[in-house]
Image (cartoon, rainbow, N blue to C red; front, side, top):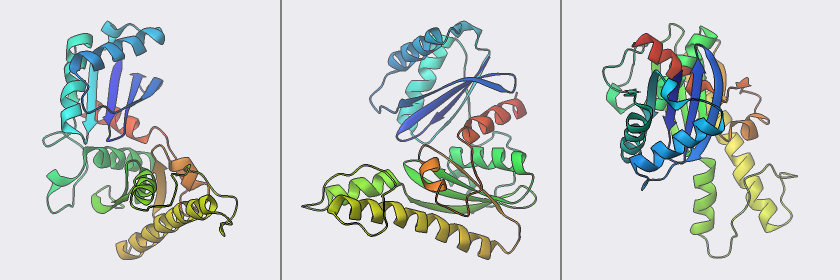
Length: 255
C-alpha cells in the first residue's frame, strides 16, 4: 500500500493506493500544534476503522505548504507506520520543466497538480485549486510549468469581511438565490460568491490570452471547487483527487 499526504494550511488530505487505485481517503483539519504522536495515533485509528493494516504500508509521499505541521506528520508516519515518506521538493524528479524565475518558490502542491493535470489531458491546461488560497497554474502544450496566480481563498475573503467590518455578520459559504441581495446576508453572499466566480473566470481568460496558445483546458480541484465550478463556463471538470493522483505519480517516478 502507498500512503499519499497533501498537507495544506486548512486541511490535510490523505489517500491509500493499491497500485493505481485509490481505495481510501480522508480529510482532517490541519493543527499547527499537533505532535508526531498525535498524528501517528490518528493515522493508525483511521487505518483500523477502514479495516487496513498500518504495517502493510510499503511507501509514503507527502507534499506540504506548512513546514511545522509537515515535521509532525512525517514524524508520526515514521514512528507508527515504520516508513520514511518521500517529500516533494527540490531534487525530486517531476518530469516537468519549471519555467519559474526561482523554481524553489513554487508550492509543492502546485507542481503535483500540474504533473497530474498534464498526464491526464496530454496538453495545455490551467489547474484551479480552491484551497485556503486559490491558485491558478498554467501548463504548456509540451508539459512545462509556466507559472500562474495566487488569490485569497473564498474562506479567507469571507473571514476578512466579517472581521474587518463592525456590523456585517459571518455568513455561510453558499450560492445565493439571486445576484441582487434583498437583505444583508443575501447581499454578502452575492458579493462573495458571484464576485469569486468573476475573479476565477477573469483570471482564466486573461491567462489564456497571455499564453498565446490554444486550446487550454481547465481543471478544478480543492474543497470548494464544486461550488464555484457549477457556475463557471470555463471550468470543464472537477477532479477531487487530482493532488493525490499527482503524488502517486511522483512516488512512482522517484522510487
